[in-house]
Length: 248
Ligand code: MF3
Ligand code: CO
Image (cartoon, rainbow, N blue to C red; front, top):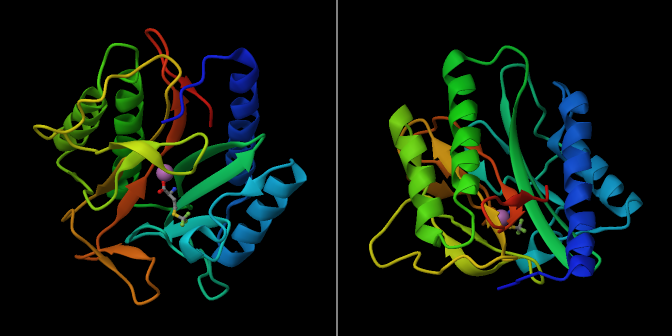
């Protein structure tokens, strides 16, 4: 667990998170049909390095790229490829990890390209809302299960399903730290109390159909078992009194 209360350290991790934020601002205007997911990944890596960071995913357990680019039925961990070309109507989840000033931050957003179906739009809206609701519970005195419960409730109200194969996590000094943050509430789990300064990566993944996923032969790409759409939003936050600070 990483707990940061010293203002100098907090400033350092903000510098890490700022890189991801700036990349997403850039992506909003620059993600478009016709570009390959590998070309996007190269742009992302260039920006990370220009801004003095390192891509935290590259080489992590052998992962070959600087970002995960997960299109449509891909839930997470889509490996960027020159053969995957974005097209009108796609929904594209981009997940980025950065190390800078000795600190890791991790975040994801799902983008809609052009004429996306009403259902896909709703999926993106619900997934982002569930992240916001979860973040609103990342405050001193609550426990992890309060975050989990808020995320699960938001997703269930919509009729969609939370993915259970992957969970959110502590971050900060390492990319992945304890505690785990499931996107559903479960008895006997999530009792960790939230202390001021705890650094968390909260990351709901939501499917329109079944929550079940399957891993492709590349060992990474996770797709929905029924081939229906999936979305993913993630922020790295610092737990505070009454409010979490989003770093990404
Ligand atoms: N953002 C993902 C997570 O939170 C990390 C991707 S795994 C990697 O777990 F290998 F791509 F780094
Ligand atoms: Co993460």
